Length: 625
Image (cartoon, rainbow, N blue to C red; front, side):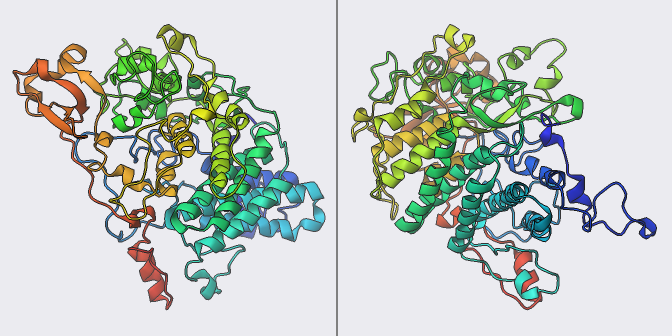
């Protein structure tokens, strides 16, 4: 049962409202409100429904929300043919709310939740049961399940805040006749986050350290707390300039990270591919929690299919590829690594941090808009079935994939903790030490390599030496853009920590939310940053001659540096095949529409505003909308 925890749905949570049984007979096979809430098992069943919602993994079936690769492609890490996906530019008429309480609700451009409070109500209901039955529960049971309910409620609110900023806050069940509360205006972000901070403090003191294999415990919760508090702390610093609140949240992120890192229960011990392609992550010492998939219980996903070489992807950008550190631990511009400045796929496989090879296929693929195709979320065997007679086995095709996903892993906690400490150091906190680097980034860089990577000539990256991280370490470090009001230069160490995140979390949950919290959303401006709409260097005639056809005349394009920081396009005309050498331009690529600072937060849809108005209430629209 524990191994397949994510396949369980809570009968209790779905039937508590259904007490009006046929012919008014009492329900004999499910708990009622009168009988529910006096045992540990009651709350375990009730909480189970939250697992696939908050520990989404690869999602399930064809599901996209919160799924790596499929859900997290809107950032400067990804490009595609045609016009690039644009930010929302009008207030939607409807669709920001849903009556469904069993599906994950998702706004991909904001990496957060839709305007829906059904899950908030669910966790408030659980807290109501706990208060009602506290006298019947022992201290451990009451404290643990109260912590679980407050944790899930706070994650839900973190998602809402990431989308909308200010949102109505509810800490109890609101009755239907409490109209003023039901239709209250938005609670200020700082007040909402203050409640979340208090909830997380409770969790860090009261949730069980161990509640059984694959069940939520204090360490797993701490991993997520480090994520969400890092987000809020840096948001407060870079958006609001509020150093006191920034310190408060960043210190909680470090406190949560300390709990995990100080436990000694986990270690970086497996190669990078095994984290995402394994059919069973049980026993992996880097993984605090994973979502297990098994066709035998009809819990499968589709993400590996989109890494199998046959299915299409947008494609990773030159901007992303350039950020991968070289094997000697330096950016390619200052690296002593042979051929470090050659930005074709084959050379980068051999000269870059091993995560590059583990993330991308080693040859150009037309199935990717930029030709740089990600195979991160599939094992080594899966791509070998491309073109094979009989096609792909079920675990690599369609929506029947069964590789596991690490929903919380040690490397993330390490990088969350380190970034929080580095940010606090800029506000008077304790400086980051070489020991801190050795216990985080250098452990990550010291991951073992698998046989395939070794056979390709991949080498482990040299450890980071804190003394090297000076103003001159990376000539392309963001030193602030004078064309953008309020844009700031990034501290050299923080820049390198951000680079480490970018290499580590490609197509996972992180990149767009990182840009938002750092107030660097302008990195997604394709015209200011043309590398966000290019692929790697390619000699088309040698590496991809099948692209040189009549059908690609006037379409196939490469870009070559113009010597002034820009690019000159060379278009295939049917006679100039030898000239088609440069950075690949996705077919018919056009920049995304212009956007402004309002894109950091989602607007509320018009139907919600009208509902409030029709009932005599007012809900404030998001700033800028």
